[in-house]
Image (cartoon, rainbow, N blue to C red; front, side, top):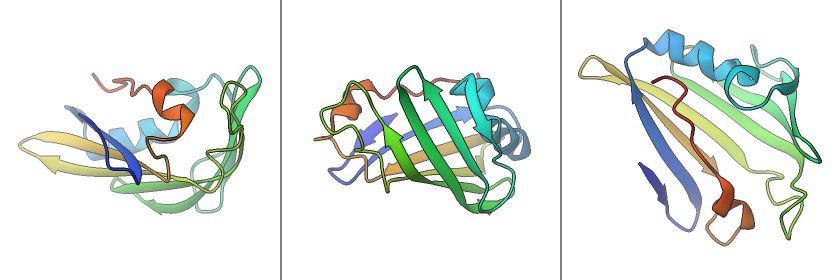
Length: 130
């Protein structure tokens, strides 16, 4: 399910892996988001960069609760195709992991990514756990 509320972009996925496996998979950014990845995502204050040609994002891990929550703060970004090339700067990507009915639910919220932003048209949530 994908939702927006004029404040944030939200989506979720239900999977049949454990919360720990989901947590580990999210932290393995180069396996699901960007093959051009540098840095680490394993502990607080880790930084990493993802690149897609001219486009890039630089993130810092600002919250990490094993098997439950991951928060990345966007320190810098350049979206070559967007009108505002830095529209992700100072936004946060939050992954919350929970269990329900023998399944794991991953809620992803991009705080600050609002519908008026050009990037909203280009966000795709890939089912990496299906």
